[in-house]
Every structure is written in structure tokens, then in C-alpha cells.
Image 1 (cartoon, rainbow, N blue to C red):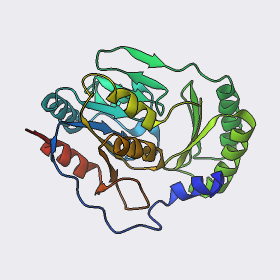
Image 2 (cartoon, rainbow, N blue to C red):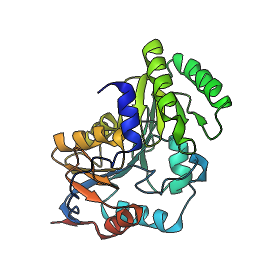
Image 3 (cartoon, rainbow, N blue to C red):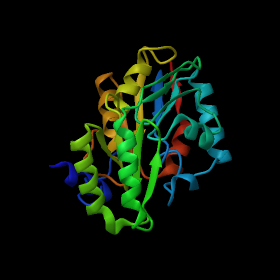
Length: 262
């Protein structure tokens, strides 16, 4: 499958759905939870800015983090600043922009230096969006995002542009749910999870990654490699996750029920 095909496939991830995955167990020995934001902790919205804080979500994250002695991290394509805005800083540990930003439990921060080609990608995305209503450009400094949730008919053109720019710039192409991103190479959600698992308070725990789209597959595989598992949120599809939950409400209910077994 080529890059363009992969992007288009991300638009309709449920088209070739597998049978529903089983619900993950809520009682686990020393779990460490790694949670995507959009589509997992927060419902998908028409624009990135439309996702806002929610009192229930914030309370659930804080409660489960307290029960698990801080072994909770939000791993998202959003920046850490955006993660904190939406989750109201409920998670001390966080990774943004697919691992290019990472904040440890002690508050120390790692941030990759932006590839200069990101500026070229941002400019090209703005040129593209200028004549296509509903297409939104997101500049994250270390990456450039192009959202087409409000312009789904542009999927083919978005795929072609992103694939061409990736080839020309050497940036990593990341296909998500009705968004493509050209990012500084070197990290993904799996590398972020693996880095957290080598540090306190996560070290020696069983990693559980919750995600909804193709960007989370790296996290599912990393969790499995370290003795844990992935949980796919939303419609079933081909995935490395072993378990599934149907939607954000089910995620919050499951997080409320998670307990560490002796």
C-alpha cells in the first residue's frame, strides 16, 4: 500500500472492520495507562479548537492517576500546551506532536529541534487551503498539519500533496483521522511510550495504550513489546490492539473502573 492509499484508508478505517474486539479488563496488576486525546479522551470535533475542557474528563483523569500512583500519560498528536488546555493539566506526564515533545512526571521537558523543512510544509499547506474552504492548517512548529474533516471531498488531493511534500522534504508523513501531518522525523507515539516506560513512575509496570486511529498503532505495538496491550477506541478495523471500547464515554467509564490488583 502506497502512502496516498494509507491516507485515504485513514478516512474510512471501519470500511473493512473485523469483528468487535473484547472489552479490556479493568483489574490489572500494576498497569500504566497511555491515553490518546482526540477520539479517546475527547470526542472528535470539526476543528481542533472546538475541543474544550470537560469537568468529568478532568476528574476521571485525576482520579485514575491518583489510584495508579501517577502511572498515567496522555500521548497525542496535539502539542503539550493543547493537551494541558483540554485536560486542564490533569496529567503530569504528557507527550505531544507524536513524541516530539515529552514531559516527564517530574515536570522536566524534552522537545525536538524542528526540521527547517517544516516551514516549507506549512507554507505549502496554506497555499493549498487558501482555495479550499473547510481545509485547516495547523502549525505546531515541529510539524505541519492539514485537517480536512470539513472538506472530505479533498481527501485525494490532500493525500497527493502530503505524499509529494514528504518525498521532497524528507519529513515524516503521519496519517490520522481526517488529518495528515508532516513532522520532524525521529519519534512516534510508540517511542514516547517506550521512553516513559524506562522512567519512574512507569518502570516495571504493564503498559496499556488507548487510541483510535492509525497514529496510535505504533503505541499499540510498543505496549505489546513491553508486555502490555493496546485498546482500540471506535469501530473495529485491522489493528495491533487486543481489546476495544466503542467511544469516549466508554473510555471514561472504563478509566473510572480501573483498579490495580495485588
